[in-house]
Length: 189
Image (tube, rainbow, N blue to C red; front, top):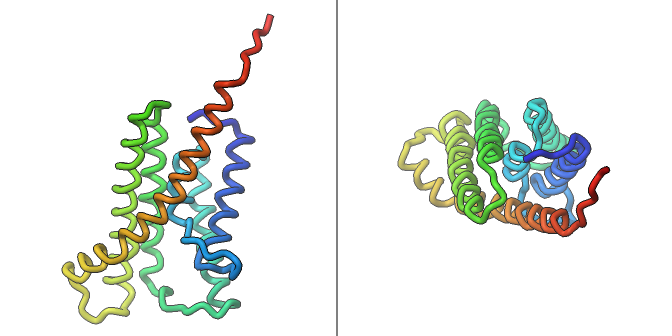
């Protein structure tokens, strides 16, 4: 994808705002699923600067810490396992980067995107959910069987939220591309 720096800036601002509006339901008027996973994946697809990943991770962390400190949100998830979110979100961002290199404006690209989303999300969940299970200290005897149970229970919900936002992004992309292709071409003499 060849997006101008201005377009990438606008997309980056929109993604950061989306994460702020949906992460942990910090805004009581919105009851949307968290867009955090989609933000990292879409940032990998659409934004080329490498500093975007750490910037988004810092935003996510600040939102979490602010919610605990000032909004009365439980600190259950704050543990040494919190840092497993780095490779978890990194898997989504890397999946997005890989897909960006594979993308083409063809219908078959949607199947590749769906596979990339599913695999990236599974790796993300294994790091985040598995990391919490094994490294948080909240579970006295974590096992692979318990991890498999948790994957079966939680992964579909996370994948569904991710698919919702990625699907909206795909529809938006198709709309913008259709509009661009419908514009008359002006020849420069």
